[in-house]
Image (cartoon, rainbow, N blue to C red; front, side, top):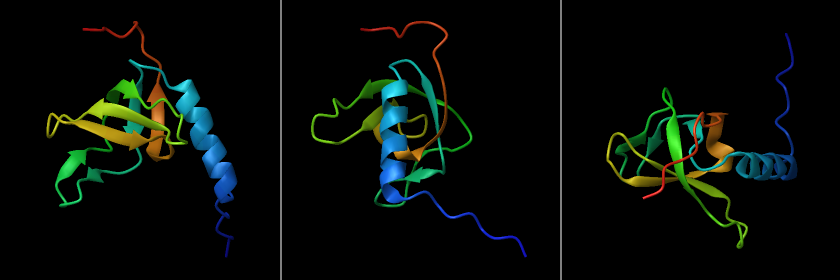
Length: 97
């Protein structure tokens, strides 16, 4: 029976998340690992689609987040970089209002 691969150590996961947070820019598209639910259990984001990054935390307090707008609730949702499954660079610069 094949061995199940060991997950990377937690410090490596944090380094990977930080590197990903630095790579992803405003306007890029991100896909989350799994459907994201609110604390009440309502769906907020779907894992089968990409969301445009409309904001990023400044990282000054060790908090590395991205912000996307939900297609389900129309709310701005915080996504931790470690929860990003895939991302695509924006083909055009983001639009600012």
